[in-house]
Image (tube, rainbow, N blue to C red; front, top):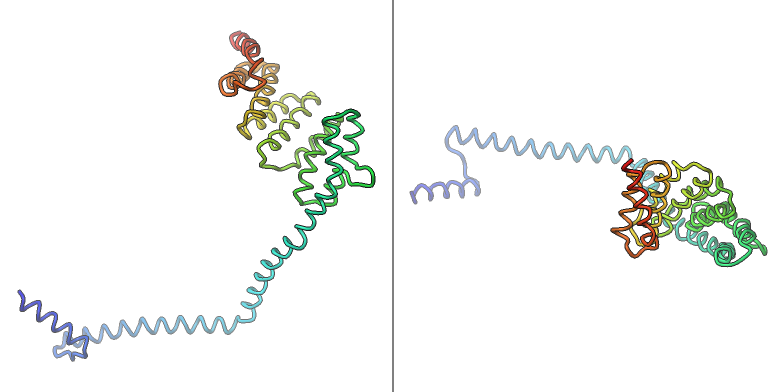
Amino acid sequence: MRDNNFRKHTMATYKKRGYKPKTQAEKEQNIEEGSTTAEVFNTLDETASKTEDFVAKNQKYIFIIIGLVAAVVLGSLAYKEYVAKPKQQNAMNDMFQAQKYFDQAVTGAAKDSLYNLALNGGEGKFGMLDIIEEYSGTPSANLASYYAGTAYLRLKDYKNAIDHLSNFKSSDEILAPLAKGNIGDAFVQLNQVEDALGYYEQAAEMRDNAFTTPMYLFKAGTIALGLGKADKALVYFERIKNDYTNSTEATKVDVFIGKAEVLANK
């Protein structure tokens, strides 16, 4: 056994070091191996040659494509740094007075006139509508859509309220559901209660927090109750009772649960 292993090892060593085949079978094997190796290298050479030819023939276009990609990347970075950032900063500065009017309207007297100032501007300053138009595409213009929509809602201009609030996009924990809920409020005032219910449901499900979730569950429940959808209303009211026990809505929900149960069992 050891002799056989030794012979195999010796033959392998000889082949590696230039061993010359003696038998016809060994010669044929050697020719075949050499031919296969040559084919591999020839294929690699052909592939490399074709690649070189392609690059040589299309070098101009390749450089143009590389240049265009580089220009797009650099242009995007430059736009963000030298156009978008300054534009957003200017929008924030111009929006300051309009936001101040809005805050005063929420907390003070003469609400209608202040909401109008928030929308249209005053003292030579931009209003929310100006921000939306002049700084389109900026975060400030997006936020101005929320303020404008809410101001129109308070001014009882419900169609404009819906339009502007629908343009507002946000992932914010509070503002996102508030915008949806305000659209629901506008539809209630337009007596489109089915639409209102849909928006209240969206507002309730958008985020899970102790402020907006029970508020819009309650609104959805009361609208559902009025539409004769007592089973749905009961689900919303019981969720408030079980999951949001410390909310304002939880203090009055038992009465509505009672009403929903009576109507659901009819």
